[in-house]
Length: 330
Image (tube, rainbow, N blue to C red; front, side, top):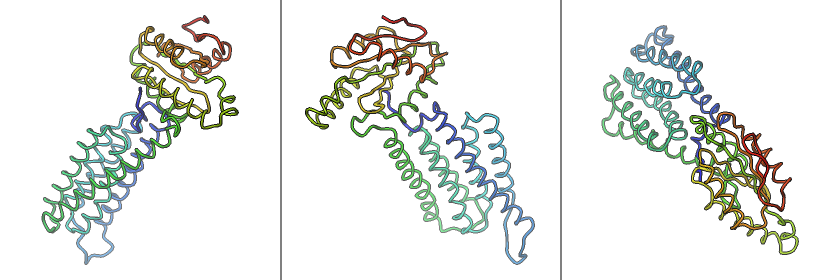
């Protein structure tokens, strides 16, 4: 069964926009601060203080502005903008003449590491975080600012890695909790919206069929009224567990509320979808269901869901009815 993660934001308009927004905020804030530093280095308020070399800040400003322009032109491409953000701060740190300035500057890569950990696959995230950490350590090592050797480097490494891991775990835990139905452990409606958007975006690379199946447990109210809500909950959990084992590997299965469930299947052969339908009939009696199918190029999950839901109510208590542009009622 499909497993949701915060990385599915690539297929979700909401999360995708938030990911771009966070990177823009980071780039905008750091570029502003670098500009502030360069201006006051070139035009110092006090002449009795050494301000250092502004070259690093100027390079960082160019990188930050370039990344912001790139994101404005290609908001769905994060790679180059992320690399620019990773390079900017170490370059600034390489020209500092004060160790205090180095520690203040360390705040930026800590925030960037949090962002990377939250929005990149685990292995890729740790490669990027390791590269960022090494870049900052090397920058401090070559900078004219005095430092206390290994202790300084250790502080930098622990700060960046610790911030990334603690914040990354928090974000993933909150994301999972927000998108998971607490009773069944399946996706909830929010998870369904994100998961189906992600699945559909990947399936559009090839012209494949997308099927939405709506499932409704019949007689659940009678079970609750007769045997209590715990008995009804047990029925819901039991059926959800059976469907979890029956759905194709990459199918999105969610509990949308009460006794209503939905499945989105993309890129599978018709026989696989048909096998799932037979499994539902055999393993979970007393279930009404309907389905709708479209090609992935023209598919709209909300439209498919509406068609499948209509087919469910038309065929309640009878074998599966199929709707959609590519299938006729049966």
